[in-house]
Amino acid sequence: MIILVSNDDGIQAKGIHLVVEALQGLGDIYVSAPDQEQSAASHSITVNQPLRAKEVEFPGAVKAWAVSGRPADCVKLAIEHNFIEKPDLVISGINHGANIGTDILYSGTVGAAMEGYLCGSSAIAISQCSKKVSMDYGAAFLRRLVEGWLEQADRPRIMLNVNIPPLPAEEIKGFRWTRQGWRWYKNAFEERQDPHGKPYYWLHGDAYDADDDGDTDCSAIAAGYVSVTPLHNDMCDHAALARLAANSFIKE
Ligand code: MN
Image (cartoon, rainbow, N blue to C red; front, side):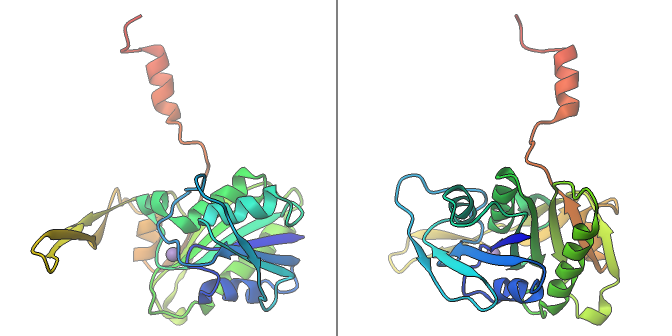
């Protein structure tokens, strides 16, 4: 099995090293990750400047590249430019911070995994919700998840978004399969003044979860469970499509 590992916190981040360590023995592991932090890069790619890929030493990996681009660039370049054979599995993380609810749309961690999914591999994005808690539980959970996926006879292509609650290992209650919730922010921007008296703005809000009826990723995390959400690249609202096709408001 070929596993490609990436992230959005940069190739030096602790989380990506824990992933490679946790998956030892399950396959040939390759790393292609940004040469600096790219959090909140979403699924963006680089089109107006060249990409550089520097081969670097990475303990536990067959080969590794530090790429001067976005998380999705790293995955796309490694697969589409044949740095490696097509991976069976692309893993992105472990991210330092939550990627739940609508925050998924901004996430570079999820962007890298989604690129792997678009390239035809199965993909897992994994995040630890607190930067202050050990990532060891998340690394062990990832190993269990990958082993379970490997044992499936048909191994259907799947894209999963995993979040580990911000708790010490002994307080985590288990895991739940969840749907994507809705996360928004109060006081999203803080206004300050620069030395010239002009205002500037810094994104820094207090998260709150709407649409929280108990089966979302946000509610699983709040209740102390690992959240596992299957994702898809299809952004079409199929219910709206059926409704609009039957009763269009655009005049012929
Ligand atoms: Mn990040």
